Image (tube, rainbow, N blue to C red):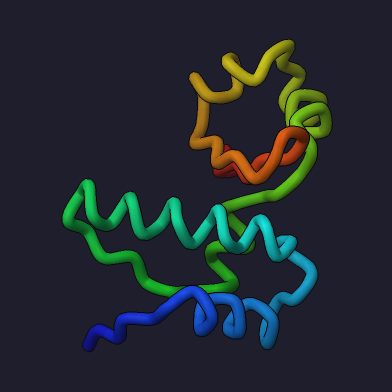
Length: 95
């Protein structure tokens, strides 16, 4: 069974279960990325809040590079999915 949701339903689902995992800007970026992914791959994504929160992390670029002991955003992008949030923050797929 499939249910199509809009951004506000997506945001509300996160706010009810994991309100501190992503910023409002981060949720916008993540929602848009999921929509683009679904459209480009013709694959539906299940809205599993806990799984998404375990799989993706929002942080500053510097923090992400420190966690993985990398020197550049390009190196991180070569190893995992990186979703821009703003000039200083990203969401990345944990690997």
